Image (cartoon, rainbow, N blue to C red; front, side):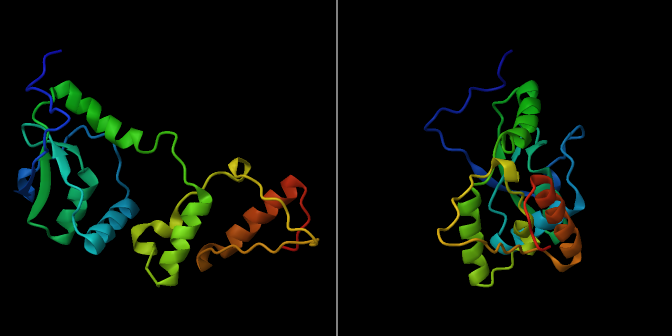
Length: 189
């Protein structure tokens, strides 16, 4: 398959340009769905940190990566957005990158629960608002996948605290009861 232009080399610099937002064209067959909650989180992120992650476009200005960021930027009222043009990609390579960009980021990844909790705790300590950015709703590994810490010596019980939003507190309690009962663990929930 012939390339449109030579591929960037390791030491080449990608050029970030500011484009009028209407110049960035959506890809009509974009398979990635952006639910309203995600757009709200992207919008909050752009408002908090700025538009710091340029969108990627092909030689014709059609989006390869950044559909959600463009929707959020339009909602905010941005007139210009940062863009990187990947003019060296063929149409098929651009199509493949659209899919890869969305799937590789989530493929087989997980959070280190201890490190994540430490980072979130430090943000909460300075009253950083995690909710608009979606950081209050991060999915941690399944309980079966977590390493089990040895119980503390000289204790017959350990208290576990769980922090959830008020509107889902009862659902969370019932979920814990079911999981503890299924595991055969005595509790007082």
